[in-house]
Image (cartoon, rainbow, N blue to C red; front, side, top):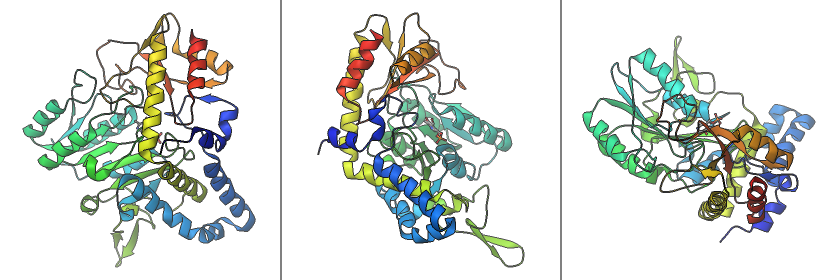
Length: 393
Ligand SMILES: Cc1ncc(COP(=O)(O)O)c(C=O)c1O
């Protein structure tokens, strides 16, 4: 069933105020999500935080099953977290590394992940190998294969959808190669989750991290982590507390058996419930329908932008998504952003597709350092796109 745009817009208060093209930053929450969060906060106000959580215990537990359904996992393979970076790091910092092992990453790896991997590399005497892009700007699968065959690889860590590039990396093919080589595959799905179907079996990843506020339309400060059951028991979390482990004997401890070993005890129950509601909302719409609509709107935007004199569209890749990047000759991306904001159109500014996410990795200078990023969601309309492009013109 295609997305009923009128219906989803009627459930999104924000569309009355703004044309929101910053969904790769943080989407507009739907009314059911916002009501879930505020409803729980209200219960905390009325009866107390612990008591409200007890009242919502079943619904809180269901968040794990909802996330599991979203990505084709089991609930015991899911942990909840406060952001995508922490979710990702909770698993990655737990891998047992041996000196001189190699970490394979892509050029468009998320900048924050690169910094974390550098710290791990320095601490554990690891080598980071940056895989080439193929001619389309995606991770070069043949280079990956060659590096896997060279051996001594501790992990392949890749970003599914880079934060400002428009492309979708060929994650399932990468997962297939990693599996064949017996190498753990860590996938950062923060920008892909919520805008396309994800299935951890098809992707072949051992770890997947997703954030709530972007295309999933969850509240800020929410995220999830998936760790494959067969990998879970080999990963002792870098940090423990009374939620992730229990004391054993007089000096020991025992880490819990499920993915919640990567969580800590205190969390925002309202946020988690909102995340669960956002996941259920996405599942009810259907992620195939979401992807169709998002990709279609993004293509319309690229086409119309490309027809404006002085505008260059920079997206790369064979399979493209809802992230659209462009620049305007003679104009700073920041000034475009603020001029559009004057007209209540939200876009963001991001490092260009020819730089990595936070310019941590050096790239060839084939495009601007900074670009305007206009990221669409299914609740955007063709008319909003025409208004955006008309103003640029
Ligand atoms: C590709 C990618 N990975 C990870 C993150 C980090 O997510 P969070 O801000 O929830 O930690 C982002 C955020 O922009 C991202 O774009």
